[in-house]
Image 1: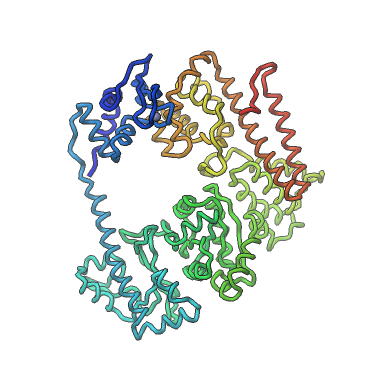
Image 2: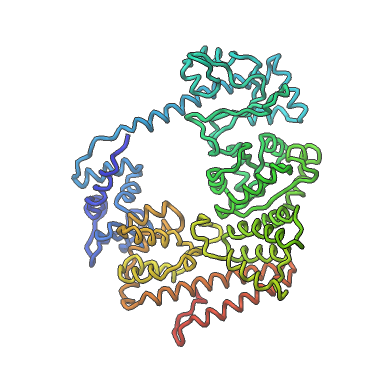
Length: 608
Ligand SMILES: [Zn+2]
């Protein structure tokens, strides 16, 4: 049940923020705004302000801010729907009937029903594995793989007896209807009102969602059937490619370690886990999907891909690289010696040997180059071009300029396109132009909270001007290029402004806020950016081109800082060649920055 969207939109327009907030705090008019002592933090002089024109509140003391709904949610400690109701009541807007979201509700209920049946099935299968006579075959298999009872219990492994209907009968005894059983995917439907158990004579690996609920199963044959693994079909509770096996158990360790090891199969995760390597997730046999990458990126920004070393595994690894880069993750590739998978390798060589190998994992670009040159002769021009074509997309997809440049140089050197060779230097430059491009459309950008620091005061000031001065904004948006803002922590705000401008949308707190979808630090900053007007007033004549200029200066400064950090790191690692190359680049950029600086102006971007 929810309120209709049209009503919510109307209410947003009609709700008087001063009136609603005024119910909670004593507001005093001051200029265009209303001020009060902040209800969210202790203070004696008012720093809490409400702008009826902008339909926002903001506290300059504790930086809380947002729409009238945010205020009520914060004040009353209620969720959004409840805030809607309260705001409507306080604004004297009659509440409409709730929409009965039947389809949504029905689907959720169905998902819960599937999970319930999955629970029953899993508990029963666990018992079969633990103690049934027939389950011995599965117990022997696990013993052969050195999987302990503790591990078996942790992962809730089970055994599905070799029977067409044993599970179905059990589920019916528990009270499930034939219809429910069929919808659960635990059986395969035959003709009318007839079905048989899907998993028969198999070791069961439950796929648990992040809360530990069984949403699907994988079953491994114990009788050398053709299908080594079979899996649950999609159900109301399970959509393929949305989950990662093991994440419910490994998420904390992944966070702690600062990187995740991505493997393919169930045992490639279970065995390392048993041996104490617990920052692992498994992509469940299918090709890695964007949803899975998003799930990983909620916990970590670095991934070591450790797939099988056979042709299919290598191909899958390359696909995974592309997916991970598209979400701005850093990727390394681990290929274990002699084509071993993680499960075999760890049982044979132990966890320490595995960790040692893991430490030797290649940056993704190295792997991609190796794959590209593997079956080609670089002395043959056609082969060389094919190799370049294969490698460039993986460099193009890298977000950080510095890393991109570094990977590019590695690749070019490897592929024999020398900087200093007369025949190839121009070609190399051309290729660099190709990969450094503005990545329009090809690669989706996401903010990398680790890399993008706090917005600088200059950035904030510019945004404040842009958000509040329509004329200035028009001029700036016309000139602004993706390159100018893409590395800024506030890039989502710029993107939102450009989109709204393009689509003719109104630019105000609510519309921009909706576009940036909680991306930090932009989202927390937004009320302040809309509210601070003091700077604006003293800069009436700030021109659009000056704004753009300042952006480009900021961008350069950002690059210079990055280069300086990288050069320092290279120096410490004793790579003096790299350090001096980076320093040279840094000097070059500093020169360019100086050329951009207006003569005799007191702007010092160095202090930002
Ligand atoms: Zn406050």
